[in-house]
Image 1: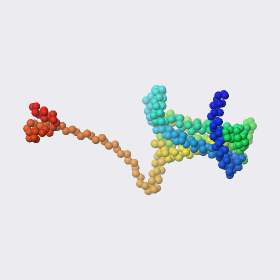
Image 2: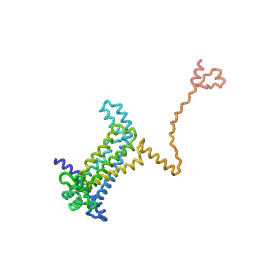
Image 3: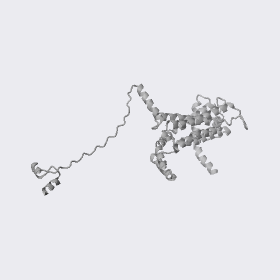
Image 4: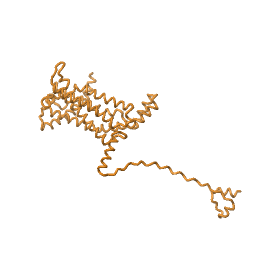
Length: 338
C-alpha cells in the first residue's frame, strides 16, 4: 500500500501545484470585481481552470479526430480481413494491428482526452474535498486559501464543496439543504446529457454507413451508454465545484466537436452531405454559378500501329525500281539467292 501511495503522490503532487496555481491566478483576477470570499469567484476560477486545461488538450483532440476518421475509413478493409481470417483469431488480430500501424490509426485514441483528464479530475476533487473538511494545503493553496476555498458559497447559499449526496434529506447526518440538492442534480443531469450527446453527435453525423457496424462501432455504442451512466451514478457524490469542472469540459468538447464536424466532416458521412448543401446555398445566394464536378473518363491507351510487312518483289520489279529493294535487307538477299 505504501508503494502505491508513493506512486499516487508522485503523480498528484505536480497536479496540485498546476491546478492550484491556475485557480489562484483566476481567483485574484475575479476578486478585482467580486467578493474574494464569495463562492462565485471560486466557481468562475474553476471554469477558468477548465478552459485552460481544454485549450492545452487541443493538439490531442486534433489527433483524436484524425485517428477516429482513419478508423472510419478503414472499416471496409477491416471487414475484408474478418471475412478472410475469421476462422483464425490470432492471424486476424495480427493483420488488423498491421493495418492500424500502416494507416497510423490508434483505436484507443477516442478515450485519450478522458483518460488524461481523469488525474486532473481526481486532483481537483481531493483538493476541494480536503480543503472543505480540514483546510488541507496543497500546492500553492495555503491553509488560509484552502479554508476560504472550502467554505465558499455561491450566492451565499450553495457551498461549492457540497454534493447531492452530502446535502441529502435522508440517512445519517442529513443536511436537509434542498437548494444544494437541486443545483447538484441539475449539474449531474447536464454532465450526463452532454456526455451522451457528444458521443451521439459523432456517431450520427460523422460516421459513414460502413463504419456503423463492426468492432469499432460496437465499441462506440458501448461508450455511448456506459460513460453517461457511470458519470451519472458517480456524480451524486461529486462536489458542486467538481461538477462545474466536468460539465464545462463536456460543453467545451461538444462545441469543439460540432465545429470540426461542421467545417471538416469525414468523407461519405451525413455531415459531408450537409456541408455540400450549405456550400451550394451560399453559392446561389452570392450568385456564383454552380459547376458540377465532372469526373473525366480514363483515356484509353493508344494502340500500337500495325507493322506493315514488306512486300516481296520479283527480280524484274527490282530492276525497274533501280535495284533498290522496298522491303527489308534480307529480302534482297533472298531474291538474289534464287
